[in-house]
Amino acid sequence: MKYKVSKNIGFQVHNVEEARSFYERILGFQEPSDSVVEEVEFRTDHNNIFLIDGEENLGPVMELIVEDLSEAKEHLINNGFKIVRWEGKGKDCYVKDPYGMVFNVWEEKGGTENV
Image (cartoon, rainbow, N blue to C red):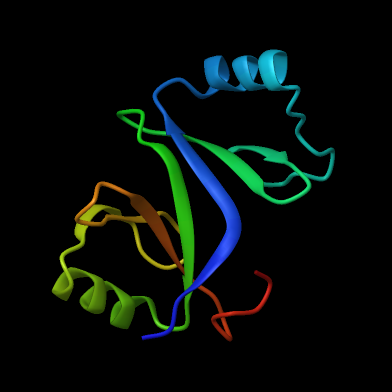
């Protein structure tokens, strides 16, 4: 199974609007005018950071790009990952590794393009 880390990082937070205000005021993050995602998106020189509504604050959620979502799910589970949330292709698919790190697994045509 081949994995590629994308430049996207999600912050799952309980209150998106409160988090948006915090990151704008304290760190100077700004949403791009061309943002078309449903979540709050901040762009930095190196990463895209998304504020994602959730039941709990998970902290940073790194993103892994794969060619086959089903194959990746099976591979990760067989290697000690736990499913946090699995909404399917094109939506959030969160897994937690044995060390507590959370990743979103994202299927993309070609798997490693646009990283």
